[in-house]
Image (cartoon, rainbow, N blue to C red):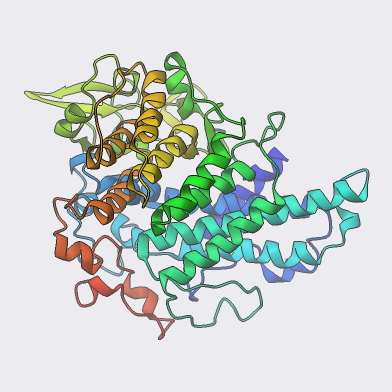
Length: 499
């Protein structure tokens, strides 16, 4: 299974660099092969594994997972790379030459990599549904049906995950659910984000129905979706929609499942090596076949790490020292003690986040290093703190339980419990704790968007309350996407503002 996963990942990455000639990018598994594949359990497994590989490729393009989720959140004060500085400044519509195909700002405005993953999910759902139960692995009809349902559940999960990601980043996006020869060339208008997320909830509930809880004996645990990953996704969708009652229920399903546990303080950094007892869902890249070259300029390692991990002396992305100082006031907190170091350049000192330092030298060649950290999407501390948000910001507030959840996490991190807070102070305490716990984990920008919706208080230095209400935090799409689709329109706030 693992070898097929790696093989399809290589294929997927080749497809992602293919130039986009249709609204949806080149299909991830070519139509002519569909008639000869999708014949066996192994075919279904390989087809579903491609969904995860394509998501990995979408997130790794111009460090997208962290650029969308962290770079504009205040975690970084500046960047030595001008186009990433524009993201920090929320200058998302800055001019980019159409010929600058490697420009990170241009890549971040393209949703085609995510639609490539959606297309593969659609293909998997279509063909696996049509496959006879008899071809799946199992010693009984019940086992073979469960095996088929597992693959269908994963395909529903990956499609829901892609649409949730795109709805957070761009708002309204085209909703494409069918799989046929005309899909790649058909023109689609943008679908209202509420309808996109409604479909994502339908999909994730089907994933919950079809998937089992974590199999601790599987080498693919955590990097393939299971029932816990589906419930975690549902909790985040509900929180994004402001449905805190639904969010609370989904969080409870994860917390009460007994499938996950918080890592002890001594092992906190093991979370980022991948597949820890705390993780719920990760994008796998902790093997040489899945990893990325740490020296490539547009990678997380190259932007955030210095010697002894890489050769640079100052991080390209400069951590916001003031934010780190204000968040981590407890000197015993292992999230600060183990997650950061201080580096200097002349009279200037920088904090450096070292969560992602699983760097390996290949063939004893110091000029060839690969980064082997998985992308941690959901983990138990995230879900416990999301439940705390639901309890403190929801219509029927339970501040005491919310504070108790905060302190459950803090105790595991050797941080002193917080006491004596109530009301809006607990809502802010939850946001701050998520900031400490999930620093540079792809959450803070979206956390602050939800916080501003609840408190109506400005959270972004470069987004005024009026701009926030007008949708400035949603990304524009690159004008090149209009060339083959006359039905597309620019993201509302950015109409007339993208050069």
